[in-house]
Length: 203
Image (cartoon, rainbow, N blue to C red):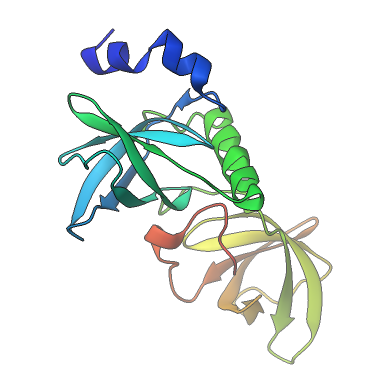
């Protein structure tokens, strides 16, 4: 076991934690009071706190704002410093805490930890699955997102616009690239920004 892991596995600390943490390695960046951005990775995370492997550690009590792949923005207070990482406690409103809990469970079940970042092609199942598909002639169809990436999405929808035809998914312009039994696959006209692409994405 590494020194960092040894320091993190503190029986008394675990007993005090309201939410159990899981080992999850996600790349991201964060800001402290100096407003400089630093690259980082998560070591473990829960809906109540996160341990961050980083270049610069904040002071105890300092506010930290971070953006992590797949989970988006988080903020909280620095509560502990370790040799090469620090821990942040988060006080989240119930809806956001519930979304984060779902995201963590999804990431763990899809074996996201300790794998290279490949968000350009990785598909996720967003929280907001209900959307609309609007065709070029203005017809609008209720649709459900099956999954999405920064480049496109697959939808359950009772429509089959011709391949290559322009459509709008929610507010996002796209083109139909494939038909399947229950819907269509589309490619976005512009790639979604990777830094804002997570389970809370809204098309």
